[in-house]
Image 1 (cartoon, rainbow, N blue to C red):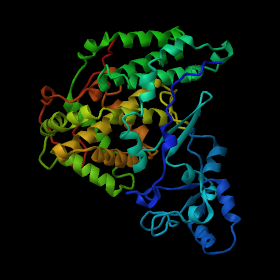
Image 2: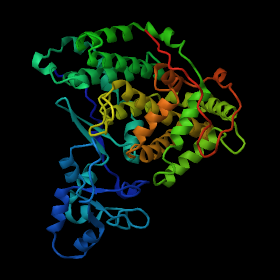
Image 3: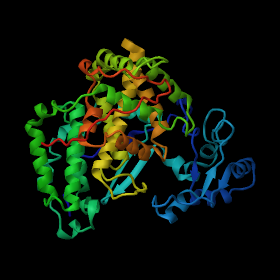
Image 4: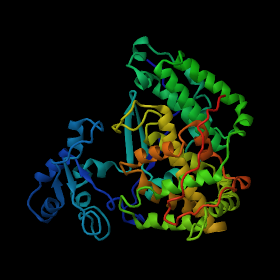
Length: 464
C-alpha cells in the first residue's frame, strides 16, 4: 500500500452556513435537483400545508436523460429524480420571508435533497482518497477560502510533500489499473502533493508556478501514454529537484509577454454565457466595475483598454496582491480540489481521451479570467480596492461560470481557437501585466465584452 502522505487540506470542515445573514442566496438562479431518496421521503409526509407546497413545487424529472458519456445513467436518474420548480423570481418557493428553508426548519436536515444538504461542499473520491472543496459561489465559502492566510500553511510547513514521494512504496498490482491516465491513479496522492506544494512555493511568482504546472502535466501525459518510459516516483523526485534548484527562474523570464492578447482572451471569457444563462445582479455589478476599471466604453480600442488594464494592475492590483498573496493561491488550491485536478471532474463528458495538459489549460483559463476581472475591479475602486471587493468579484463570477455545464467546453474551445492552448499561449495568459506590453494595433473593443478578433499567437513549445 502507498504510504500516507502528511499534508491534507481540511478547511472545508470549518464551513458554517450563515443563513439569512448571507448577502446572496443559494436557492436562486439555478435549477435544484431532487434525488430519489429525498423525493420518496416527501411522499411519506402527512397531509398539511408543507406537503401541499412541496407537491406543488417538486416536479418529477423522469423525462430527463443523462448527457451522453457524462455520468452513469442509473446514478444520474437517482441524483436528478425530480426538480424544484422555481417561482417567477427564479427563487425556490420553499424559502421563507427570512430566506430560510421551510423543509430544514420543519423537518430537519435529513429531509433535504442531497444537493441542498451538502452545498457548498464538493466531495470527490479518487484513487481511494476523499477530498472536500467548497463552491466559491457561496459568499461565506468564498470568504473562508480567499481570506485565510494560513489555508496552505500545512503545505508550506511540511515542505516534504515531494520528498515523501521518494519514501512511498507501491505494490506492483496497484500500478496496473488500465491505460492512459487511469494508470496514474495509484499515484494520485503524491501527484496532488506535488501540485499543492508548487502552488504554495513563493520562491516563484505565481504565474511561473502555474507555467511549471503546465510543464508537469504535459510530462505526466507522455508518461501515461507510454511515450516517456519513466516511473512516477522517479519523475516526481526529479521534478522536485528541478523546482528546488530555482534554475528555471531566469529561463521563464524569457517567455512571451503580450498584455493585449491576454486581455483579449479575458474579455472573451468574461463575455461567455452572458446570453446563455440567467445573469444575476451581483455578476452584473462585477462586470460593470471591471468594464469601467479598464476603460471599456463605446469608442475604446484594444490598445486603450490594454493601457488602462496595465495601469490598474500596476497601481492597484499588484500592490494589493503583494500584501495579500494568499488570495489567488487559495483560489487555485480550492479549484484544484474542486475539479479533481489534474484528473478532471468526475462525470465530465469527454469527447477525447483525458489529458492533464487540457486540465491545466482549463485551470489557466479560469485563473486568467478571475485575475483579469480582479484587475479591472481594482482599477474601478482604485486605492479603496479591498479584500471585500475581491471576494465579491470571485463569488459572483464563480456563481455565473463554475456551475454552468457548458463553461469548460466553451472555454477550452476558445483557447484552441485563439491558439492559446499551447505552452506559448498559456504563458501569455499567465504573465503579469507590465507597462511595456501595452502597445499594439488600434482595434475597437466592444463594451459588451466581445473583444476584437484574437491575435495570431503561435504555439511554439518551450523546453526546460
